Length: 458
Ligand code: ARG
Picture 1 (cartoon, rainbow, N blue to C red):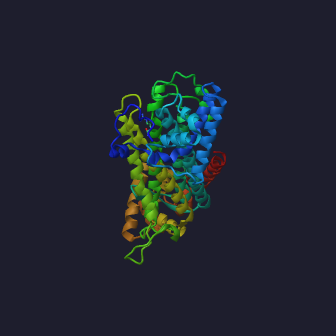
Picture 2 (picture 1 turned 90 degrees about the horizontal axis):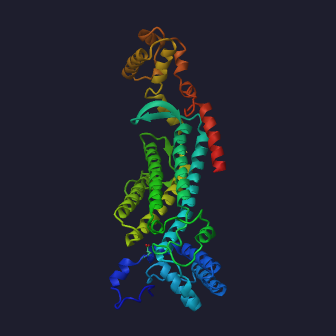
Picture 3 (picture 1 turned 180 degrees about the horizontal axis):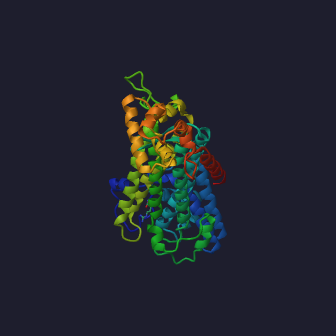
């Protein structure tokens, strides 16, 4: 059952087998392992290292194994050490001696480096698509809420009025950058390690350019020692995943707050909420909380990977086998969270009247009131003081700046006129902010058009 029994006189301890084995998780890339092998033998034949018959026999055998696994006719036997051993042994069992030539000019070190890259490459594309799906939901919300006013916060204190389109637009930008990072990672990792052998290449005249192009890589990796011991791309990936999770977590944190009775900015759909076993009235945002919570395990994978790699001498070391479980877990977590977040957001109802009411309270137009005075020739610092005193007066009377009488305004400064009310109206406050990046209707409409183009093109 082992690929390497020759130089041993005793069987390995059962616990050692169990501890050493990776098949329970690396079986995940059976397909990549088989496709990598097919490319390898295709190249071996072109280089006259295998005969055409041998190559055909091996390729047919490998294809039958792939088909049978996919059709559930063949179960991956977990008593093997890893997926590589399982595929090779099954091949030899099926096609006989030709199968024993599969591993010519190859080591499991470059093989596993290849399999993982092939697997991760596909996952990067899938995660990239899922981020895009989420962005499409965000874009739809932006389009529908150009004039949905809400308070913008700093320090979680109401600051200035914005719109829901503008607020959601911030997340659109975060996820756009996340996709950019995934693209960069893909481009940097897309080189083929096959042919690096155990660490020092091989004496067979392998055509590494050929295997690389058969497997749609941009080319072969350049240094064989680096090829079998590089896990940088996983660290970059886990870092990009951590950033995606951080963004999702911030969004979920806001949704959780907005869903609370204190805010009531949103109503979660029943399909994305859960109840309490004791409190009949409860409708909890568990999904948002779980996404926020699962962020921790993805960060954990990143730190774990960095720590695993930091003390490793060149080239391959078995420590590197630890790259898989945590990366797979992070991949599953990120994909699950992106899907759930998009669904939850898509079905969430925004209580726009309540948002707008909240924006009217809390003096979010105080800056605009000060700017009004500046336009009438009052220096900004003086205007700041005047409005500050008026805000204090309003707080004492339990009213907003919009409700303060013109007399009261004039008592603080005779620069005030009847047009103050129009100047500090919510719509004015937002719509006058029309420079690039601001929440004004015109500025946001341009962003929304730009974002639509982005979604169509990328
Ligand atoms: N399961 C191993 C891993 O994931 C495959 C490579 C084994 N190589 C070796 N020299 N033991 O790293």
